[in-house]
Length: 381
Image 1: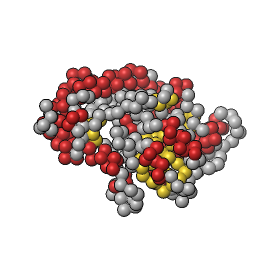
Image 2 (image 1 turned 30 degrees about the horizontal axis):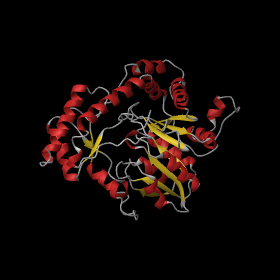
Image 3 (image 1 turned 90 degrees about the horizontal axis):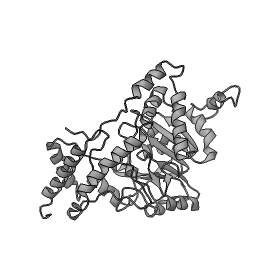
Image 4 (image 1 turned 120 degrees about the vertical axis):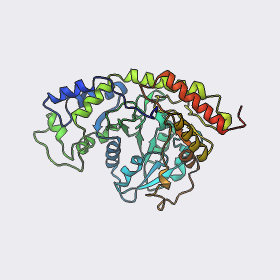
């Protein structure tokens, strides 16, 4: 069986973990944590980076920094992972779900604008598959209504919007280093602070509500409880693992984009007549090779395609179930129908994409997908 995903190891992870074992700091915010922070701040120009134990933690820190009140509303795409919404629900805000675009799972200005009310405080954008939302127009809309923008950039490492790194455009950003992501440390994440007014408080929240970070820098002669917070920072073992991955970022990204292009070269131009939608990369966006997906004509079509590939020893899989119709939220949802979101929930399927996938395997997968589509679409030549 060719799996959907296989976590990548560069070969240096154990070396760096052994270094941590011989160091004086294992609990976190040691040498490897600082290396990772410096890497992102230097390479992408992020104002402040703070490693977290997960992308969910990074989003929860974003929600805490937004200082939401019980009546406040947060606009979130329905086609996303639950963390994009639950982080804000935990702060007592009301989540208002937005539809996706017709040709891309991302939300758009057109799907956001009708949802803005006097109670709206935050727009959460998710760059699906590492492909940017239209950030100029979203930021302009947010500025008009005095709203904060949080970028859920979980899938978006080393991806850009008009030359600007994703995660670095909104007021706050959140990355994931889960084992399914391009760069991973098993479980991990990172908060990015782009607005200077949030920098000091982000460190306090990160350090369990204390000003310990300032104490370690010699800015205060003692530290204590200043604010709410939690134990968001990861151990040095996670940071050491992540550092080994970051050293190989160029190689990892190059290989993933190479596999993406193999899929695209075989499928594009050969399946669209069968009602298949392939990934659309707008002119303003880059492709970071995170995911290659297809949108099938129907749920039944997708189910049969997945089953057919499984019989051939290949695991392809669907993705998010829309949050607005989830078991937890469906009785609370009172908005208009989210037609595009429902279509992606029923019809989107993802192909295997990981570093160790060979060219031969990628070609075989694409060819079998092509054959499966033609079998399910008899009138297609």
